[in-house]
Image (cartoon, rainbow, N blue to C red; front, side):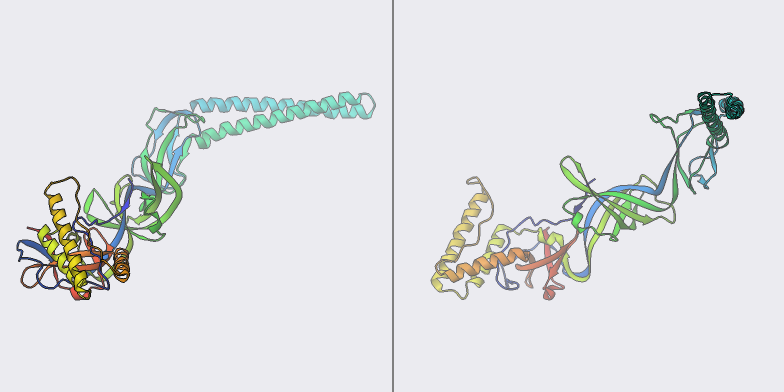
Length: 432
């Protein structure tokens, strides 16, 4: 399952472009409005995370195979048994192996006798050759025969050794490591196969279950945030109320593409001293990209709140009046007139008088180039600083607006930047 960074999207009123740090709408934004649910602006710890999921697996897993084809005589271990290196796991039937050993022994005796005879013959031919009673060709022929029979003797010795090892070692399958039996795939009486086409897997062993690994997939958009040694928090369905921790042990650079989605495999290691984490469990992970403590934050729901249209329009009109306070009267009147016209047009669209939708834009300053440049600069600065509208109830219960800069976002809260004076303020999160 592909992971992703947790994000909070603002759905509601459009952002205002304001110059300077913050713009505050003091006083009423229309008639007094009651019936809103609020939450306080406070301090706490906020985290930026990347989510993912993966399967728990044991570290140091070993597949035990067979090197012989034969019938299982005895299975000596079972699931979850602890084993030591060299401990017998399975015994194969050795009747046919013993027959093969006797055949190899007979072949070895025959090859040894033939070689000894050829060696004596060659020694005798050397003596005859020295007395010029035998040609050089006949001597070389006897030497060649002796070498051929010597090679046959070595081959027979090898076959005998192989047949003996099959009985003494390979017919008894031993544990290659100290560990625990995770899976047993063989029963007494079964035939196991040891050829290259269908090798029989007998057991799956793990070194231990005190340390586990999680193999998770992280989306290509988030992989740049993952670092070796990063803390990871995860849960499993078997213990939904308990949080487990781990660290990033490996980031694999080979991409894994599924349905045109590119992910990268990240291996997380975790300790399992009490043994409650089991291989195959699904782990829902959160990679802790950033953690900030004692920061000013507000519930994310506050940025999803959208007030009634008339109140929002009144708030924005008052904001525009404040922005135009130092402009000439004619320019202020033109801008406010444009704002009112667009507000009425937006209201007609909302009532379905013609297709389309969306809120009206703030009017541009007319005339002087300085004002236009200032307005464009403010819009660009607001977008870069992530300024967002925050609605709250003032002292007399009316809705007011504050444009704020935001920082780290998690699933519940959003950090407020450079807004210490807002601490303790009650912001609106929804209408009752």
